[in-house]
Image (spheres, rainbow, N blue to C red):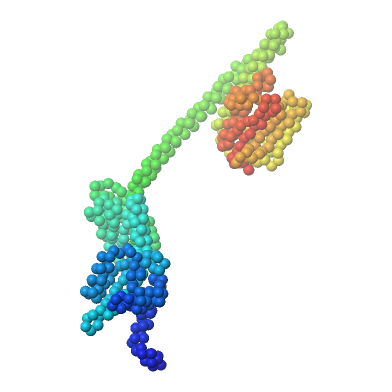
Length: 510
């Protein structure tokens, strides 16, 4: 039926097939007469150029010219066409939208039996996408080359099936020290590796390759001049879908400097560890000697002190009536001074124990401990009108003996320096200061001038005279050492006549 219709229209089946091919070609097609006037175009012409058939039929193909090619270009093209009946090349043309695009153009001249040209047929394809892809690949390769060069990285390809290996210039220089004798096989690479390292390196390469897994191997090579170089290779196996050949694509770079630094650090650490052990032993010996010396001095000092105190007491009791008032006063001051010195020796021993004693870290009920200290203070002076305010559920992690002594010192100080107040108020609590929780002991006592706060935690430094308040100046020094051993910090805020607040932190407090 289709052949009958074609015959009725004057078109043979062969011609109809040719028309179908002409219309459905992916390339654009232009059919012109001998004067290069367009007679027909296919749908791909419209898709590529943007011109519909009725916009170009009867016009010359120069409607597509971009102006990029010079006149000489077209003159040479027409000379070739008339001479050989064919021309093929790349041209930059312009779409209807004004956009320039590259195309691959083939033109054929159609001749009659006498050899005269009757028509021209141009077939072209749009190269824009292909050129863009080629440009992207080229730019990517350039960026990769820059990155590899900047990182001192070489590339290599290995075919395990035939043991063929290819290396770029950088990889060859890393492995053999030059580009003159590149390793052509994996065996050649192993030949540069120390014998004792070869089994490990072979396993690092072979096992993941057989399992088609990416891998990383670090190894040492010996260069022809005898120097060592430490390299790292990273690779990924890939089996081609078309040829079935398995290849390993990899990179390699030099880590010799890092290896030498690490070895130097290890040696320094070993030396430092030996030094630390030696210094620790020396320090332990010195501490033991100091502790022995402290107890010896304390014992040797206490004997004459007790004699001085005892004999002065006997003198006062047996011969006090024979002395006038000034003599008895001087004798009492001698006794007071000897007793104060005895207490000072006790406090010095306690201060040394804080630094030397072994610490344990356990949960401590700070609120309960503070209540015990408060009860002890009140039982010693029940006649005082004093109020203790102790927050509940305050807990910390630390040494219970040291923390108990810390609270005895701080609460004892607050009790002592608020003794001249008609109604004393002493508070123990906690508060958040910036990013940490701090405990505090606050009183409404005499306080002190903050200009002298730097002396507070130094041994034997006092901001009040012994005539005002008794003491040896060791208590707050003990507090500072206890807090320091727990990894915290201690400070104070006060105003003269308005009381004081002592803060301390314990990093592991609950």
